[in-house]
Image 1 (cartoon, rainbow, N blue to C red):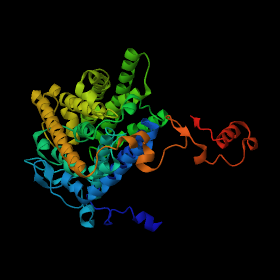
Image 2 (tube, rainbow, N blue to C red):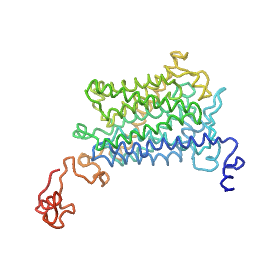
Image 3 (cartoon, rainbow, N blue to C red):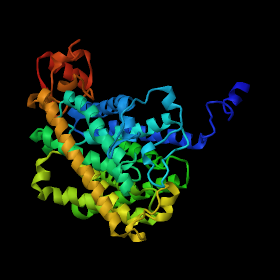
Image 4 (cartoon, helix red, strand yellow):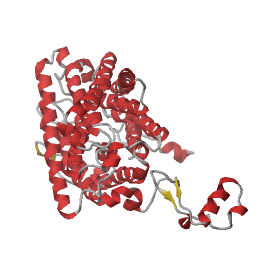
Length: 485
């Protein structure tokens, strides 16, 4: 018992004076919640929202993106995104693997400028590395939603580390790590631009270069399991408490406000989207409800801890209506949007909703809530004395993120395409998971497949040795009859 009690002694090296145990415990919890959004949240969501023949491939693309991101992050990505300033949009590269680095107090050295001190959370660097990794990983997993159902898995395996290093780190450093957008005063509380606008634009760009799914898949791509889709969406929603609640890097008032606003906006957006479905299509769509939930979570992200809760309701109304309009109305009238096969409409649910949230944050962020979370003075929304200039900054920051992701994603894919085909061949697309991985999600027959008794163990004994349907199937199989299911 003495040893166990001693583990909590403030005099031990494991508990230095600068360490706040509450902040560290919450940040590790928040990191785990964000991780659950990807693993298993989006893995389950992707595996269930797609056609059955793509369930394994879609889930694996998310799984692989998560795993590959971690290695790139600790080898070089973390310090490029969060380290000392090298360029206005990039930090100095370095590993995040050594004891001397990971046990020290967390710091974002480039955030110091003028009279503003550098950001120094009261937990170790190891916690910062883990939390920021979860953000980097989920950005890539969200991007994958645009290219499900046809991207060559080998091309995806090459794409993920390159995009993380050359695109994600630029947005993260520029807006959070002390880069030029941070110093200019662009507000992005928890990733409306860094994560959602980036993944939406990069995903749309990738969908363009990879090419479309088969015509038959584009015309009919029904979810293979709507209940699992809801479960994956639920994990995403609950995990968002860590997403936005962890942004202040402390277990403080700002975290509480952020988590409450996140839930309020998501619920409002879901209801708004559902009401629009009922008004225009005469029935509520479960897939639509999940999309409305998603746009609400995305929209509140750039201002979750910076706006009042009544403003979160307003943002939820816009989040459930503007992306609905772009997806249901504008999409069908735009030749470009119709041409690009964005499988899960990531452009609408993340790029549009993320940009919308950034603009609304520029209008509605209050100086009082901002002062609870940041040492940067003077930032506030247009409605609270920030002037039209704050909206200009939000639009300027968005323009940089859009342009960078468009150009860099294009360059990466064109480079990979020289060596690896970006799209699977049509004959493999007809088959799906079995062609890509030699595995299938369910031991069932469907999607127009045929049951061949010679491939399955139904030939032992005759039909007379089995009762009911099993015996009848066995008898038919023994006579060489192929059954269409």
